[in-house]
Length: 113
Length: 107
Image (cartoon, rainbow over all chains, first blue to last red):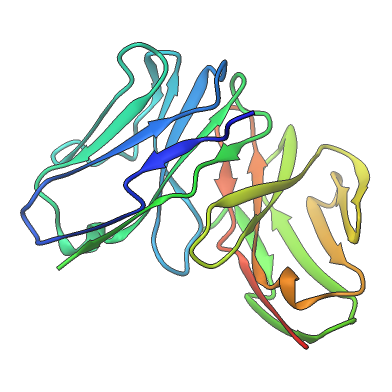
């Protein structure tokens, strides 16, 4: 069974530039999560999708972050414009339904200069 | 205030030692997860438990729902166990994560 796929693995950009991350969850998993993990901290939920609907985006900085999961399968997370404090690992995870066992991707490490 | 507290934050052990990582939480939960994160790598789910004890190889996870406490034990530790171990809880509609325990096992 293929795991959660994320790309790119690494990205370096300058502040005020834009970046997009892509995630393909495990086939059949209805729930998809995007987490931000800053060095030394636990993951922080940015957005949770159930199929193609948003369940929770309360901690998503909507002035600069956006995410979509148009067909209820893969998802993109965009940051525009990026700030220095956005430097982090962006983790995508999926689960069969709401909560339950989480499967994580390898993460996308963003460095904003 | 964190809903999930882990201790210790950092742990260094000699190969072969028995290791315990603790997790305390302040909310009612339906399940607790132990996750492992290697440097530069993604996160792997080790255990999901809602009561009692689970064992997988050299890893043992226990939970006491009344005391809102869980422990992760590693027997006969090995350098490849070096990683960050994260506790996460499900209070019903989302996950709360601890900040992790960084474990280094020295040969």
